[in-house]
Length: 256
Image (cartoon, rainbow, N blue to C red; front, side, top):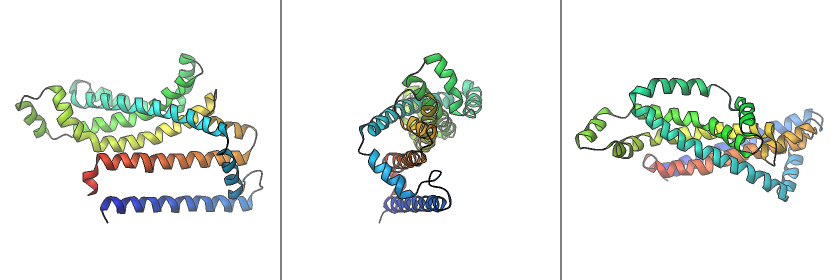
């Protein structure tokens, strides 16, 4: 069995065990608390089964995935570009890194009021909040990786007459790819949390965050726990199935 297969099986087992532990402690809490405060696991799973048969559920899911894709994708592109620029141009490297470190300390949700005022209600403020959450770890990881590129490789490329574009393509980008993948996974966690939080606050149209907020407003604890379950499972699936598959494909030489 290859290292890649062994790692993948171990990761799946870890997630199955984690889900089992979470559901177990959830059920234990439900035994000790009133049902209107903490529903049984099977009750929430029954609600989830009902939701899976409704059009509204898929409409909200589609809205959330669309906002996530737009914001996360834009953040990856911008993060790679700015990270490469900051890593290769010494004149802007230090102030740019300092600005990124300062700005990434601000919670993504803190930007919501500003973007609502600037852009109004709609998809755009949520998408921008998601992009902000994912941008900083991406840019910082690419910048750090760019700075660590071996100097001998840079000098050799220059001696051979490589242009700046060729150096970015042949030297820098391959070197930063592992760090970029790691940064992209970290950025996804930030983007996902920013998405749910922004949807809970903005809540102008269907989405996972709005559904969770509405359940809380009407004190529907079964709905709250069902939405939390959906949000957690979706995040795990995207991270471990989609992003891990991309990681293994791009870095397959490390898993031989």
